Every structure is written in C-alpha cells, then in structure tokens.
Image (tube, rainbow, N blue to C red; front, top):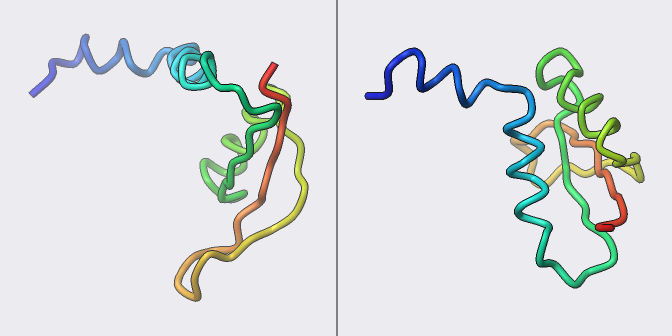
Length: 77
C-alpha cells in the first residue's frame, strides 16, 4: 500500500493535466471529446476541463442508471 507521501505526489494538481496531455500527444484526430458529471467535485471537475480548453456541446445519459452528463469537446492541438 502506498505511503502518505507517495499518495500526496499524485494529488499534485498538475498530475491530471500531464496524464491528459500524454494521452493526447500522439493522436491524429483534430478533436477530442469527453463526458463529465457536472456535479462531480461540486462542479470543480467541469470547471477544470473548461480551463483546459473544453467547451460544452450537449448532454448525454448513457443509461437509465447514469446521471445526465455534459458532453465537452476541444481541439487536440
């Protein structure tokens, strides 16, 4: 089990952005989309994606058991 110091390293606010950027680095597509629960983190997750350049384009409810999700898109580069 990771120690407290090791877990704290993953809580660095830049870690999520670095992982995100690494996943998109070698993609050929012009755009990327994602779905986010607008209530996640009290709206913080949605606002974070907005700071990364994502914009809302609609809503989706993948199943009757899921919440309504906000669909977001941005240019890859």
